[in-house]
Length: 118
Image (tube, rainbow, N blue to C red):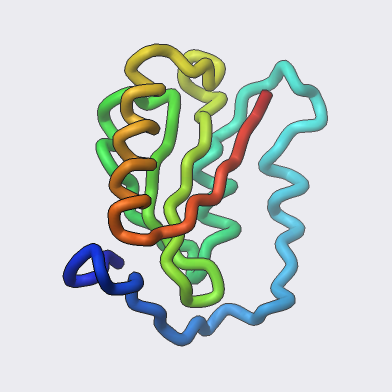
């Protein structure tokens, strides 16, 4: 998912996911009641290519998800708060985790996609 160095672009691959793929599952994953928690990891899995992503520091500051994935074969960084843990609140540890991840993505020319439940 990462280039050999910071002067190269991230490697792209052909995606087997159809460009106009729809996911009715998302309607069930995200509850209509904004006070009910849900698993943002399942939402991400449903959206990214082939349902595959690599979460960075998944056991630290679990109220935020920082991950590398592909969308249409292109590498992207994903930052998403996790409503299942501490209601997805952005505390100091989550903010530090996200900031470090943003710096890494910036260093390797990786665009960032954010998913926020506020």
